[in-house]
Amino acid sequence: MTVELQHIRAARERIAGKVERTPTVPSQSLSDHAGHPVHLKLEHHQTTGAFKLRGASNAIAALSAEEKSRGVVAASTGNHGRALAHAAKLEGIRAVICMSRLVPENKLDAIRRLGADVRIVGNSQDDAQQEVDRLVAEEGLVMLPPFDHPDIIAGQGTLGLEIMEQVPDAAEVLVPLSGGGLAAGVAAAVKGVSPSTKVIGISMARGAAMKASLDAGHPVQVEELPTLADSLGGGIGLDNRLTFAMCRGLLDDVILLSEGEIAAGIRHAYELEREIVEGAGAVGMGALLAGKVKVSGPTVLILSGRNIDMSLHRRIVCGEAITERAA
Image 1 (tube, rainbow, N blue to C red):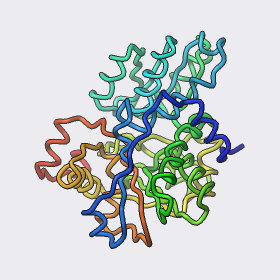
Image 2: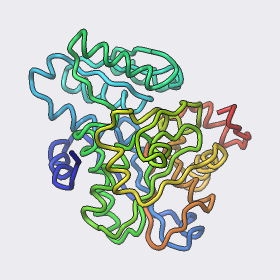
Image 3: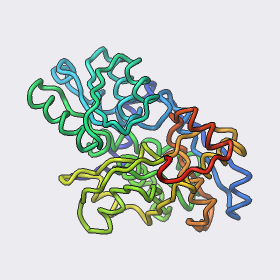
Image 4: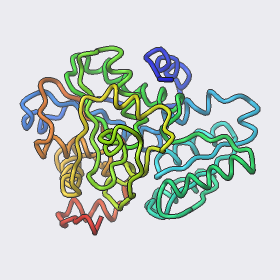
C-alpha cells in the first residue's frame, strides 16, 4: 500500500474550499545565504495555524455517513488534534483528541475551544495512543491517526502540488519530518511531478523517531523528549504501514538539528522574514543557516506551523540561550 500522485490530486478536489492555498514567497536573506533562490511556503498561514488541516479535512471528507455518526479519535502532539477538531466541528461530528503531558498548554486550549473532548494520557504519544485504541474498541470511534493513514498522507501531499505549481523549477524541498505524513505526502507529490527534485526531511536531534527507524531499517521506539520542535515529537508506530516505507523510498536525506539551531530558525523567521513560526516550522531555516544543507538550485522551505507558546517565542527572539533541558 502506498499513496501516489493520483490519490493526492483526488484529495485536492475533495478538500477544495476547506483549506487555504497558502502562498510561497522569496526570501532575500536566505537566498543570499544559500547562493541560490530560496522560497518560503507559508503553510503556517493555514486556517488552524499548521498544515495538518489538509490531511484531517481529507480524511473526514472520505468517511461514510455511518462512520461520521460514530465520531473520530486521534492521538496528537497538538496540531493534528486542532485540525481534526476543526474539521469535525464543520461536519458536526464528535472528536476526541488524546495527548501526552508534553503537549504545550496553548495547543490544548486551542483544541478545547473547538469543542473537542481532550484526554491527557501519559508522557508520550505512544501512551496517548493506548487511550485511542481503548476508545476505538469500547466506544466505536473511528481512528484518524496523525500520519500513518492514506487519506491523511494524500491530504498533506496537496501542499507538495502547490509547491511545484508555485516554484516549478525547485531543485530541493526541505520538509519538517516527524511521523512522516507530511514528508511522505509532499515527497510523493513533488517527485510525481518532478522526479529530479530532491526532498530532504528535517527533524530535531532529540527523539527523532523516523530518523532512528530509517537508520535501523525498521520502525523502532525512541524516548520522547522535550524539544522546541514539539510538533515533531512522538513515535512512528512499530506497526507502521505507510510512512516508514514511503520516507525510506522517497526522501533523499534526513538532517537533524540541535535545540540551538532550531531556536536560530525561529529568530530568523521573526527578525528577517517577519513571520512567527513554531520550532517545527523553523527547522528548514535552521538547517540552512547552520550549513547542514547545501542546496544546488531554487529551494523551498516549508514553514509548517505557527502554534508556538508566545512567552517561549519572546524568550527565543530576545536572545535567551535555549538549552536542551530548558526546551
